[in-house]
Image (cartoon, rainbow, N blue to C red; front, side, top):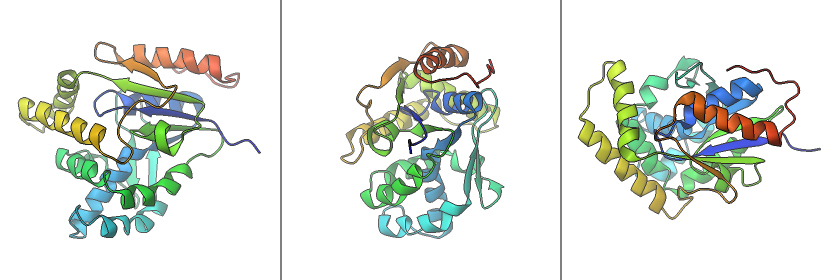
Length: 236
């Protein structure tokens, strides 16, 4: 039996991966996987349980406790994907900068990545999957039918993040935000395990000067050419 199709969207934070994946999953009616949220949830649970992120083996042990209780719900417009843990929306908690930094550190540990790999792949269910992350096309779903890699310059990504935080009443130093994003890029691209890079055959799109609708339009046109979308309606 043929496995359900997969579309992967990889790239650094602030490039619009979450928004794009949410739009695609709603448009196609496919399942959604926000892989980065899993690492953030692990970081949150490690903090709650008093486990330092450096203790990778202990943090990996938390995986079997959270896997049955995590769901992703696609959102409308530019709203972030809703992340449900134990029946509660934890999106605001896991999107804090300190949680993102801890998640990036956890992602460098092989024990943590291995613990999450099989569960990530379990999201490949009918009618299809849209997977958002950093190694979806290179490691988790190397045979995906379509691979997309989004990029954007660090200052533009910092502007977007700064705007998001300000709208939520959270005020941070813009310069510190730029530095934090640049440092995370260095960690993600230089780590030995599953470094952040375009997958073989991935279509690269620079979103620095492109809006949500433009990026979605580009990817939607590619999807139309690769998949049978006779039953799909147009949400845009």
